[in-house]
Length: 349
Ligand SMILES: Cc1ncc(C[n+]2csc(CCOP(=O)(O)OP(=O)(O)O)c2C)c(N)n1
Ligand SMILES: [Mg+2]
Image (cartoon, rainbow, N blue to C red; front, side, top):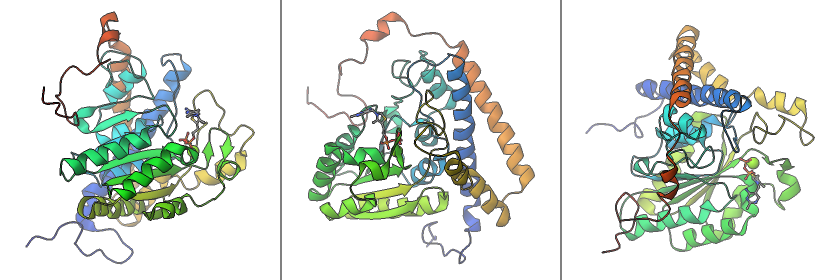
């Protein structure tokens, strides 16, 4: 019988050489997110992007490590800081950039913008701007999967400020009670806008909140893509086979301001703190690991980076030249017109 990647024994403390391509791809994806975000930040400063724009720089290993453990049919829902998740899920840089520019070729037809990226064909069901409001939606997606008796799982990404929102508790209670295949990923980057976690939450360890619902939980180092991936594989296994939910508290850090209109540290954190955290840059950590394990060398990483910068440049050009949506587009997608598409209930009509 062939040995699966998950079952193959790994050398102690080392990476599995049989997964070298996958490991290199994680670096490619993290670099793509980083370069894309830098370009988006530049475009925002030039006035090419309207509305809000929240960068994910510093948190790349969370989206890349976790999404790599999912299957094509699974559901994903995110907060407004979701460019990285969209790219890691496979929405093209062109259509994400075009969406930020409000163009018709954007993944939400230019009507969603930075905070509402969407691609139902990939199970990517937003991009949500209201803090915590998408957590019950993910619970509903997990319920749908169980009700239809599929093996899908529903994954929900949100920030640590969302756990003080009633919707979080209602959604987790239901998921635990009904044993739903849901994975709640709290990206704890320590701040909700400019409010430190300890100023807003009565307890520091967010993972402990799962105990209220007798839910499986883990604290995960979100700067290490391999650790993130392993924790997510365990959560996916629990959801798919045992049909039980998990709360992952992922400790990470945002290197930029809350949104493009905010300074990097402001009054709520010091320059020294940000500089200290930058020493655990997930891309640098993973690059060093690949070099140490002999899976890549510096020249190969530089070449990969160059290729990605070119790819992002092309996405930018594409978005610049793409046409605006037609005015009639305003009236489309307001109400569902039929029961087609993945995840839409069969109304029997
Ligand atoms: C219900 C609600 N209240 C307030 C806001 C304003 N707001 C936008 S982002 C944010 C902070 C959220 O922080 P966190 O959940 O930790 O996510 P992060 O921005 O750190 O990724 C707030 C309060 C909102 N969008 N929705
Ligand atoms: Mg936060």
